[in-house]
Image (cartoon, rainbow, N blue to C red; front, side, top):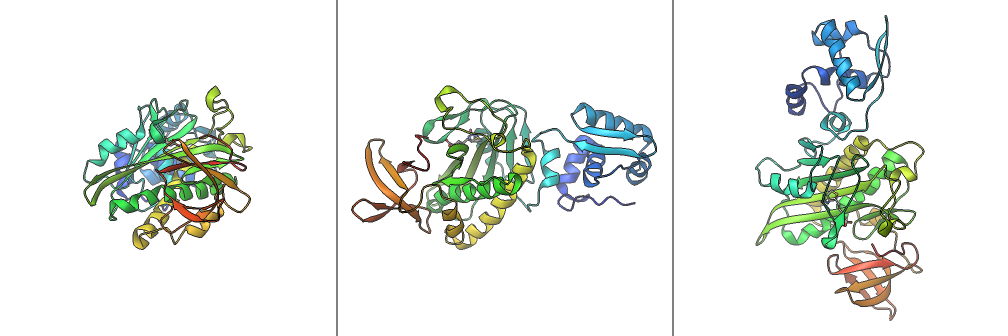
Length: 356
Ligand code: BTN
């Protein structure tokens, strides 16, 4: 028998070789078990990988210690029943279909902020597409200087590095690209309908599930790098009092707990596709319709309060976005005006009544 190695991670790929150096045959055994939803005999594993029975046994024991549930039956072999909910490269890479995004993964069991770490690593030459992910983000950063908190292993906190070929003025659109990627991925992996609150929050039943923080380093008319940071509440059931009525998590709306690695991989898949199109087109015309269909605050009856400079307030209706990703607002006097993210904040009056 020949292992049908996951097509996304074939035996000769650099990712595989790099991981193999760190893990020996453990990854090959794991991928072999992951591929087959059946018992795989010890003999098959030994023959295919050219390793001894003792090595197979040792690896199975180690995997179990790491939280993998592996059933072992005499004369049948080993069957992988369940994998731990980890966001390590071992769990993410087998689910990933991208060509370049997330092919280098830096997993940290704890770090102050994945955005900060990703910005540091972005200085290196080969960092386009590099993903930084952690189980425990201790000083997460939010938009407008706010903080972003989460308990260990309950959330997704990840950031990836991009080295775009487009000028800085186009970079604010990337945040909408990321929002659409996350929205699609949540729907595909969990089946949950979700909405985008312009420009880039994801909400479910009016509660914020995901926030995105995009940071950029530029030189005059040139982008050195962009870091897209994504925070998703996954397993959280209790939030601090200040946000208890505003925040939600995916598990609150699903029957089964969400597997974080699958969602991370799907976000990267979706983002890579959208990003490549965005780089070619140079604006958001190619995704405008779909983005608008997911907007929470849109339409004649859906009023929004637009706040400029934290004090000036004006009521209008959000009519959608333009090709540059600005929110097109129709004011009460009938005048239409595009407003830019960063310049204003938007609060829904009906569908999304929150101060977040
Ligand atoms: C917001 O305020 O809505 C944006 C929150 C962004 C949080 C994410 S979590 C991963 C990444 N690292 C950070 O420090 N922040 C972003």
